[in-house]
Length: 248
Image (cartoon, rainbow, N blue to C red):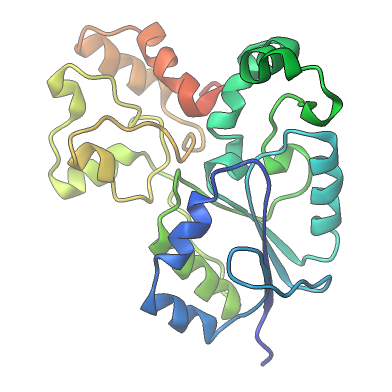
């Protein structure tokens, strides 16, 4: 069986998710036995217009980005959104809380009106084109990335967790961050990362996006139990959840 041809692209992002791929080190060599990379600016000088799987990091912030993304989507049998910027707009989407003229002036000062600095409200990939799979996180979990690529190369459907981070905290025996008088987004955030932030002493930042049909009532009860309000929770949701709101 021919190896699937894989191309990796990026838009507005820090490219940290692609760095996570490189950080697989020796395991990356195992993945490469199953796929054929044909374009990846960070690692290859080659370019190709033919590929089976397109992996795209970054959010869409300019008209030309939208046009390019549609061009990338066209030949791909599978398009994967890589990381929070691609899956939901990421931190880039914070600018959507402000007028674009205000954003340009704040970032670029007197040069903000120059045509080449034009910017639009940030969008995730699936707000522009059809996305087949999402690899969540900021940055991604590279083990999850390798697992998903292996599944696709073998013609299998990868299992993406659809339960909250709280489950993984309990499995690890991690003390709930609410016990430290913190507001944690674990009750509404999709698992799959193995809860590294709470286990390291930080609250969950919500970088994997909301679990499908989050139990908002349960989250409300948690907040009330610890003397917090839903407004407290929503203030934390802005970092990765601008333009979104968990509803049941």
